[in-house]
Image (cartoon, rainbow, N blue to C red):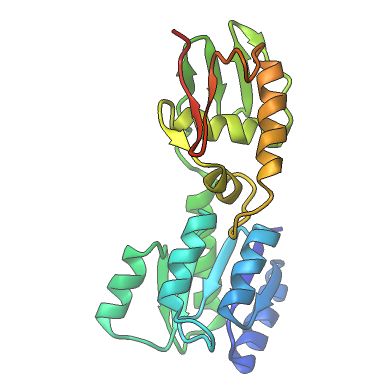
Length: 226
């Protein structure tokens, strides 16, 4: 059952859309403010998001940019704004589709189905190869020198994020935001603990790093052993 998040402050529109979604067997939740919507995105991980631009606390265009920082779920912008400039800005900031109010329930469901179809068949990401370390993001597997690594889901996500940026220094704040979806920092000890576990499984230590190098005061760099 696809999960739909409505970020919509108009009670009439919201009620009608929730009824339509229930009739078509979608699991729906809602938020009535921008900040509430952002919290719901990170907490619920919806399959598709409907975003109204006219929210009471923040402009929807700004919210769209924030949503894109924490999820790649399709976003359907639904708003009374019909100016072409607004549409262009929304699409450039990451909207996948745009509906101008008022619109019918059948039209809304058809757009949702199209977005979900496109999201369900993404291009398979290539394997990440750094030295003898091989990660397959699609299969969620990792190998070192041909041996399968037994990684917890969050360990794999952290290692894959670093591997995709091999050679770059990634800050702990960025890892918290992108891997743990903690948008406001803090809890950097969490990164340290997972880093220690990863090093153990890669057969290295902080004192004798091979792949995972700490750049003190800056962050972590994953690099091929010399």
